[in-house]
Image (tube, rainbow, N blue to C red):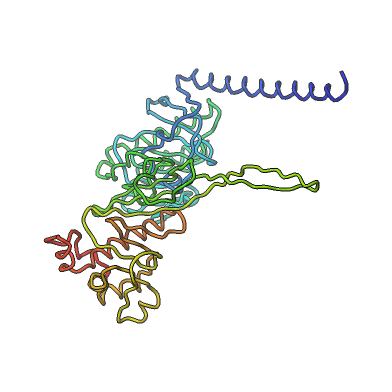
Length: 403
């Protein structure tokens, strides 16, 4: 055997030995968890995080979990521990009812909203200061006791107490959970029985928008929006679903592929061709109206002649197109023009009962501002316009207008 193949054999043997080492170590770790009476799931689904919507949950897209460990603590409290993205292991203990949002840690929790107050070594963040005061009074001693042997980075998220920084080792994890259990028990105790939080979302959602539904992928909704055609491998990614005053919202990223042929000629005049696959994506945001409305567009390339108004400031910033100028003039009355100038909405088109928004990215913040605009804009439409459209009463309250 020559030297080259000897090197290849040595490298292969080393690789195999390393692989066996990690397999054996993984198996021993799983066995150490099962020896405590716990269950282990190697590739759990995101369903294990349903209902969790306070940071770090409920923030952004691309959410992943791994290594789900579940069971009961030494004091009989149900728990679930999993690896959440790059944050490491997160422990959650069940609470008997939803409680208001709360964070206790040495420093503020990134992304969390609320009032902050220092209690000893802890920064406490909550939207209700009365709840924060009562909760710290009930659990403060147990939090301090936990800190004697473990890191403290806690939050109350609906029906679960969440602890970041849970250890990986089975025995250390058991000690961590046993220190966490009294805190969960005190949160469920009689001294805090008067406090009640909102019901957690039934599946993945977005922070500050618990009624919104987030799905990492769901191709079914591609059939419900206007999208680019052609190509193949069409996917609906990071789908966000919501309803605002009866108006349905769909936001997603549409991704698809196309093939093209490239030719090249070498120095000898030989021509070769190859197939190149390109990946494309586009953000889509639509609002689907449950009632009839006329077609028009604002700063949107397409159909209809431009309609001009008495406000030069408005005409300078907005190009309104509509096949029926009177309808556009009725909708864009002087107060509506003033509202548009203040709101500075993204380009939009209303056609066939759907409002398409010209978003540059699939961004929840743009969805929220666009939803607010759509509601205020439609609420500002005069009652006689709705009557002409066949509605005896405006289908959306004028109290919601942007005036």
